[in-house]
Image (cartoon, rainbow, N blue to C red):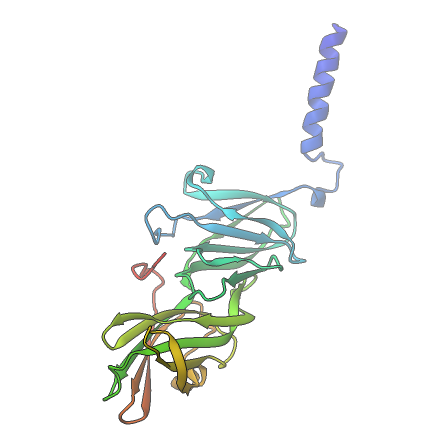
Length: 275
């Protein structure tokens, strides 16, 4: 037999064995191929790209990146090579102002920004076999808070700020992650304002109302409302899979504040996304 051919064949087989697992090897050292099934996802925004985070059992990031269309297989599905472990999966649509913090298992909202319109899926998948699969189901990860002013002072040019102690998302379970939150409601009408809030871990949210100077900038703090406690008293649940919206009506003439909850039910209404 030709010695050169034997050498080439040996090299090819040797290379193949380095990237696969033989019968005699510890199979736990071989990867698992995890399939994320997107067949039940209706894209929230045309052309939007999901972002995926895969964490091993120690919290180390196995992968964190956008899933572009050319990375999808028919189905549609996305296949990732992961270690044989319990893998924490998070899939999010609509990331703009969030980024991975110093901890790979936490997304942090940028300073001064309101929450992004995030729809997300979170799961823990047993990947200790050769293959594993998970089906992506999206839930709303922000609260749209509408502020409505009533009473004789409601036409004055007030400036609003919302402060809190939770500005992040834990990628293991989508619970709130601590961090300073400060965001400014947008004016949507003569007496209405709106802001998107991230999931909160307690009732520490506060609504500050400032009078404005001649340039429309905040000058003197006029009112401060315990927004978190008002929402809690009305029954708002920050631990729901899909977060509800809320309406806060402030009546200056009566010195009264009313809170209403607008439930989010089926997980399929993608019309409120703003990117």
